[in-house]
Image (cartoon, rainbow, N blue to C red; front, side, top):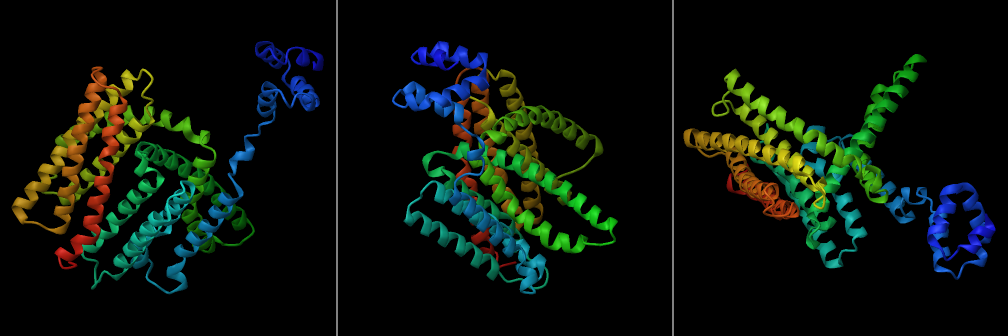
Length: 411
């Protein structure tokens, strides 16, 4: 094998044939004679190919590992603040759940993308301002509507800041959506593995008469849940191929399922006589459904390769967006009806603004999907229109978080 490699070192085709004939022998022989071939660029390429170890990149750089371990420990400590400082857990987590994870992810991508010191200072000041504001909002007895709205919209604002840090300033919002999909997949895998491990651990201790469920939940589970998004993010970035092939499959599987489910649900709603115009809880469910389906559409578009023939997938997304437009229209008309009948409240105004934004966004995406389906425009334009509107949601989240409590008197 050595002689044949030396004879054909400048013949890439023959080297490939030798390699495919007996890979282990080829690698052993090549590594033995590599010292004689260092000056040959082709030999250097073969050496790197034969000795590349994917496991070397699985855990990233030493600096990344230190950051992830440190961030996970700090996130776990933040999750234990209510217990350490005797704070009401409901009071703490409703206001601060976003700060347990998002600041570390923002810092991670800021460091990875080498953002400027000025940008880092601005983002840090914004995060600190948001944390101070939400924790200083008054609460007399039961939480007021504006406090609840601020607590709900603040994570969306932090999500937008994360998107900017990820690469939004350089047009990387579509990649950010793809990262979100991969993050969900990786978090689900880690949670399933953690759930099985936890069940096995508690079961084994129960067999010897030790009840560790309370201790295990208070320390292991809570701390582990705090670290999951950080570890999952690290894995998606350090080993991008780990879930990159899974996400498109999930998108292709769930898009048609969501379409069928949504059509059946709308039909069942009519038959059951449910009324979003007078049933506040049902209207809330309607809007949650709307947000979930829109997220699926965005994720599916982000995972659909624009350079491949995806006629069936584009058709499914087009129909799904059309049905979602119908859902949005019903939800928007119900909100307008409730405002006309019972007046403006913080909740109704917040839902109205979100529904209007989603309606405009959906129409734009639907038009571009129709263009892609009829070959009038490329599928890539769908992604561009889709991400163009994402910062607008961040602005609206900021308005609801910071402005609503002031204009409605913290009620």
